[in-house]
Image (tube, rainbow, N blue to C red; front, side):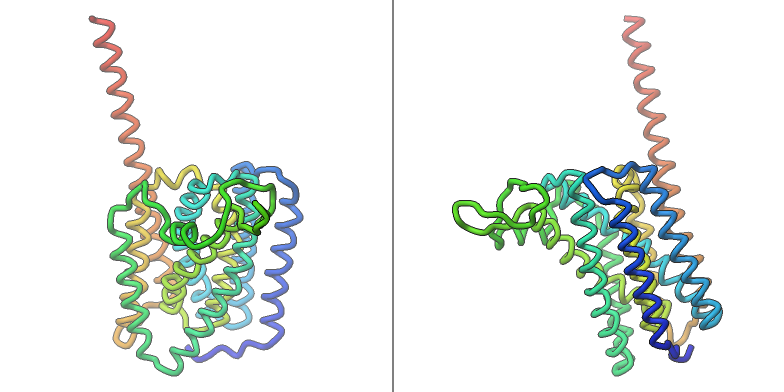
Length: 321
């Protein structure tokens, strides 16, 4: 596909959608009320509808292939962003950030992610245009990331980013309302909120090193990659509320995410010889995630039945005794 001729007003439209969406989100979630899962699920649906509407506009304005590439890049980023949520849980749990303040940290984190993703995407696009062989490097990065995901995670493992920040930043373990900084003994120190924000921002940059090259596996158009990344990120806060309690039960999800990364890496490396249509990429990504989620649910139900049968046996034994 040739380079898209994206007019300045299209970039302005994207900026307007992002600014309006963030403003609506901030207005709807003002105050300290904690979102219910039902409300977060509704907002997750709103962000998906906005993204699909934008996809439809790209389809009508730039053609079917551009629309398919957007859909594939969006689904890819949305899937890989779930891995970020595990880190969010780890950081918030370690710093004992209350639910009412988590939303504030995630909202500020979105602003940082918009800027950092833009820098990485445009730098990557410029580098690929200058040195097309760089796609092989991106492919190798994704394959390495897929291999790392396959390793069994340690549930008690501390976030390495958070551990480094705790050692090198002057901070207090005590929360001070909504403040990111406070004074203790005459010195200005960071609060756990600021520590969580920095940890999440740095973690997003680390994850972007995987997800941005993965997006280049389905499109080389900066406008498509950046817009799909932005719209996927906008719904991350609501998605966190929806999935926060269920992430621990999705025991096989990391295998699905590893398969997605491996597919993207293999696609980049094999691109000169094998062309995979964007719509096929959408199907493969969806199947990988769906299978991992289905197997997780099946395993949880099997364990629940075993536990129930064990309790029944124990009760029968106690009764006969």
